[in-house]
Structures are given as structure tokens and as C-alpha cells.
Length: 423
Image (cartoon, rainbow, N blue to C red; front, side, top):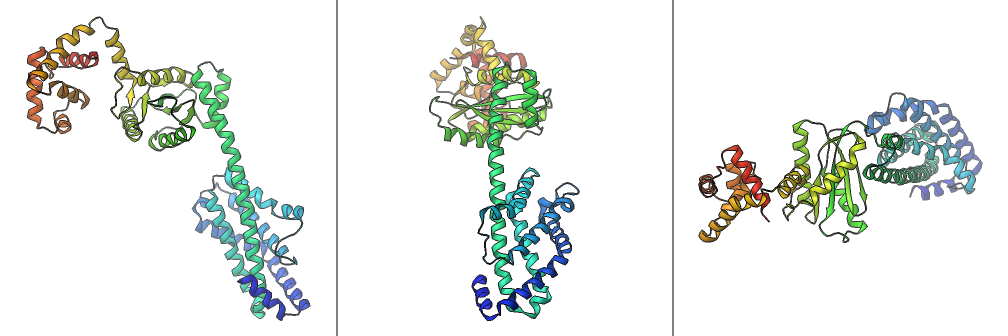
């Protein structure tokens, strides 16, 4: 509408008079270019939080000069015969500084939404200054012509910077994904050079001597995971795993999603990882989630990866929606390789199975729930939807049948191991 009104105003003005007033307006704004640039930069600080967070000096040394250059380009457009520059080379040259500034903003961490907000704010501020110019106050019809020019200029510049920003982001993202896959493969394969580890890990900020755990996510049915489903699974992993330390790396490898999770020895961090991994497993019922022990240094990631695989292939992996930790798998391996496995089964599991069959009882179910709850009577009762006294009675009966008291630590260990000895 503004452009149409500008055409109407142009027909009411003598062409020479219009050119004269336009030149006077341009001279006026040229004289105030530095002041207007400072005003725009100040408004960026006040209105756009991402610009306030830029390092000291960027606003004055980069943002404000770019705003002034944008003003100069707009003033040049006021003398064009058409709304857009027709020569492609001239168009590219005019908008090249703004495309370069968009690339800088990307690497400074400014989101594209904030960048476009800045250009809209630039347009509002410049129009305010134009309206206050004496040439516009004395000739309101000239304002309609200039408004159309400003709107067209803001549109062209915004399009140019958005395109440059997204092109740069896409290129960096593609490069980053290639490096991510290279680093994952190098770490998991177990035979990269230390120089290569150092070079690739710096790109993602992974300290080479920190402590790491590997979280592995794999479909319960291999060869049925499409690239699209794996990408969605990767997004779910990134949404659920939130380490407190720096150096978190995730990616897709074959039909798996692998996460290299930084983790110190603090027990609270281990509990946090367990809670996050269990929540991830609950969110991905068609996948298995395996978690390794914690190892020191990126060079040990291959060992951690193997442990996460062992956790997934553990004999105790069931349909239960929880993560499987290598510590659990170690118990399975110990029981499986022990010559006392059959003894544990005969002395504990068989008597409980026989009692449950004869009396339609749930002693074995209760023992499993008791171990899974961390040996907590109230939690076990809640899981089984019974009273705590009922759980206590059943545990007493287990003691009578097996000779192992669930309230004595050594006996409880044997009971827990016997559950793992069950086929």
C-alpha cells in the first residue's frame, strides 16, 4: 500500500522538485549517519538480549558500523529509478557487507530470529529519523515515496542476511556432523592415534583426560531401524541425557545411537545418569539402553562401548522398560560362569517356584520386586499393590523355605544372585 501511495505522490510532484528534495534528505541523513548508527546500536542493546550478551566491543566495533553501512546503502537506494537494483553484480556488491555480517552473527551465537529482529528494528528506527527530517515535515508526500523505498530495502537486506546465515549454518552443521561421525568411529574402533583424538575432540570440547560413560541405544529388533527412526531416536537421546559436565557427544553409528557422557565420580551424578537413562528407556520401549562403567580418558571409550554392548546383551535383559547397566551385567557373568549356579537355583528358586505352584502364592514375584526396589518394604508393597506387612510375611516365608533371611546382608546377596541364576 505504501508503494502505491508513493506512486500517487510521485505523480503530484514535479520530477525535478522531487529529486531536489530527495537529495536534500539524503544530505541531511548523511550528516547524521554516525548519530543514527549509535541510536540503532543502543536500541539493539535494549531490545535484543542476544546482542547484549555479545562480548565487549562487538556492539561499538561491529554492530554499529554495520548499521551505518546499512543506512548508507538505503540512502543509495533512494536515487534508484527502480525499487530493486537491476544489475546482479551491483546487487551482490551492495548486499555483500550484510551477508558477511550475518555470517559473523552466526559464529557469534546470535540466533537467526534475533538477527532478523535487529533488521526490523533498524527499519523502524530509520523511518523515525526520516519522518523527523525537515524535508519530510515540509513535504509529507515525499514521505510516502521514501517509505516505500525503506520497506523495499529492509525486505531485500533481510532476505540476503537470512539466506547467508542459513547457508553458513547448513555448511557448518554438515561439516560438524562429518567430524562427529569421524570422532565417534575413531573412539569406538579403539585404534586411533592420540594426535587424531586430540585434534577431533577439540572440535567438540571433549577433554581427553576426563571421565566418560558410554550410553548405547539399540533396537530390540535389528535391521528394522530406518534412518529416519534413528534420527528421531537420536533426538530423543539428546532430549533425555543432560550431563552436568562439558564434553557430551552423541551420534548414530550403524543401527545404534551412541552417547559419550562425561561423568565424575560423585554419587549424585551417577544417580542422575541412572534416572535419565531409565527415563530414556521408558520413552523408547522398542529400544534397549545399555550403560557402561565410567572410564578415564577418551582412549578408553572403546572399552566402555564394549561394556555398554555387554549390558544390552545381558542374560537379564527383559521387556522391562529400564536401562541396563554394566554393573548388572557383571553379576550375570559372575553367576553364569560360577560352578555354584545350579546350587543357587536348587536351593532358592526351586523351593519358591514349588511353593507358588502349590499354594498359588507370589513369593518369587515378591522377592524380585523386593530386590528391584532396593530392598524397601514400602516401595515393594506399592509395586505389588499390597500392604507392607504382607511383604514382610512373604519374606519371612522365603526365609523358612530357603534358609536365607532377606533381612541379613549375606543371605540377601545369595537370594539376589539366585534370581539371576534362574533361566
